[in-house]
Amino acid sequence: MSAATRVEEGVRVERRPGGLHAACFSAMASPCEVLVDTTSAELALEVGSRAAREAWRIEQRYSRYQPESVLSALNASNGKPVEMDAETTALLEYARRCHVESDGWFDVTSGVLRRAWRFDGSHNIPAAERVSKLLSLVGFQKLILDPPFLSVPTGMELDLGGIGKEYAVDRALMLATIGTTAPVLVNFGGDLACHGVPQSGPWQIGVERPGAHASAAMVLELASSGGLATSGDTHRYLLQEGRRLGHILNPRTGWPVEGGPASVTVAAGSCLEAGTLATFALLKGAGAEAFLREQGVRYWLL
Image (cartoon, rainbow, N blue to C red; front, side, top):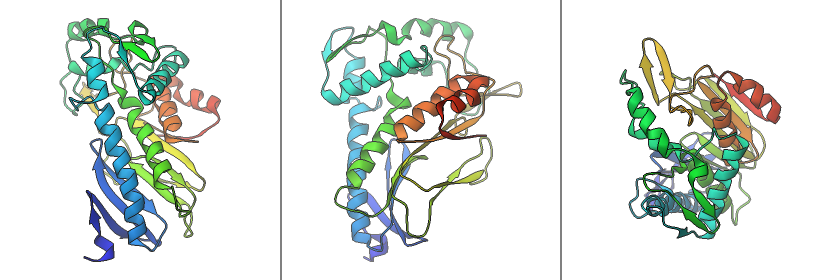
């Protein structure tokens, strides 16, 4: 087997332009790749495999779709206190800070609303009564978080989809760069983080235009270490009499936030920070750009 197509543990290595190698794999329902500025396919495979193993580990622990995950155990606890490990405690503390700093708009308990909403590009808008009934199961303040213990009231659910993938990107980059000075970029379905800059020049990042079939609406350059994340309704939306309803839901009403940009991309010190700010911005609706200006970060709106 040639170095350009080395495969190991579900990771495939490919040559890319500019002297790069890409280690490709699937995780978190997303195509993932780790770009390494190296001529060595063996190094790219080693680096990419470390990132892949960490992505799979986090997915196994925190995916709501994994019946044996930590998250599934918490959601099935029926109000009984559950002792969390240090990693889970840190994630829930971060979620609590996000809830407070967003005045309650960022809420990891609002995922239960997916029982009513299916953002599949159709015209299938749920009945208002169904959405209203689910609101009784939404509200981070209803959790009893007394670290390291957490009680999730019966019927409520935690959904870390708003921070889980971004957290995984940062963790994967940290592990991927151990033992190498080569510039590395970790990209999990468009949420990414990088360390170092390739010899050929800044990392080139394409961002899709919501609702279009074009491969990219714009190309961004990352010339320093940090993270970048995009949030929007490119693939998850509904149509109602000509209105496009994105998947970002107001946890107070249970209905999509309207009036804001279709897509927000943010560059920050880490992927988790960038993703959090992008989601906060979308939750602001028409106030998205004013919010991002106040944060002093690079951002792009579509």
